[in-house]
Image (cartoon, rainbow, N blue to C red; front, side, top):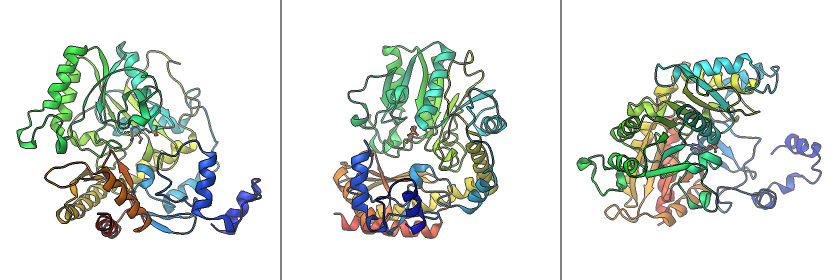
Length: 449
Ligand SMILES: Cc1ncc(COP(=O)(O)O)c(C=O)c1O
């Protein structure tokens, strides 16, 4: 970190900050003392330097450079310090900060709502509610589904990740640490997510009779079909980067419709063009009633949206948040949407994702412990197993590979589920970057067995 930024922190009243203290250990210790929670392991990751970085290059506080394939957990659509984005941001620096979007009208949020309604699947009349996080984008949809249907039960999957607060947490099931001890906010009927590599019904892909869809039909028959909505990730993210077959998603949709309920696609991670389509559910040929968005919609700023069928809420004040569609953030989101389109990023995400998968499949051929490589566009996962035949999960090996990748190979990477590594890079990643990523992962795998 340069002297200017150090001085800046000192000017904020932190007189003890000096260049000699810019070490990972010092700041991790200080963070652990001050912050209640970190979801990642401080033994693996260094402290990030918030003042430098470019594209897919990020740095820790000691100046070590990493190749980032997390995209800030699928948030930074265009990577760090993307010049056209910075230029646009500079050009709107004089706009007003913070209008409470759900209390008063302002132009940016109206235009953003119109645009999202236009690009989201389906020709039905939609309305939009804005928020500042993925979990609350999910909850905006859930509350609307309850309001419109008069029902309050939901279908969700195992695994599933929809957030860690309130109603969204009730849908989540990826890790008992998120759930145990916290009351269940809404009643949930839970069935297995369509996970063909480990079909919960013991089927092989070729023999599949959509047992997972039948399981949902049966669950609704025996537990009651008075559901407000089925909530599904179009690609399971946190739970292990699982790509469901289109026919299973369609099946879940149809069973939901048999109950006169809504179908909701949680696009917080997979949406915003990441898979090569604006919304990942489009890959499955399903038109959902509700869509939740966040992460890349704000390109680094907290912006989320719940999109639902008009009128969405039966009356004003049925739902509200103070921080909603702040004008500057709304303009930035509009810019991101336009730039994804103008820059041909839907096409290039699909192409680069296919290249990433092809290269990772070479690692699958090479290493016995790489059981599966799957994904759509720039949302890809690698599942680690003891050996290909037994498919026994190898969570400890995955953790070793992750640590090696970060610490020795300087590959900034994240896990998903119990034994998967995921790739959700920024859309500016190049094929040359991808070659470097695969080489580093290859080394980390070889080094960890
Ligand atoms: C599919 C999905 N839904 C919801 C969330 C929750 O988002 P947030 O952490 O912004 O509340 C996430 C976060 O990873 C997610 O992947």
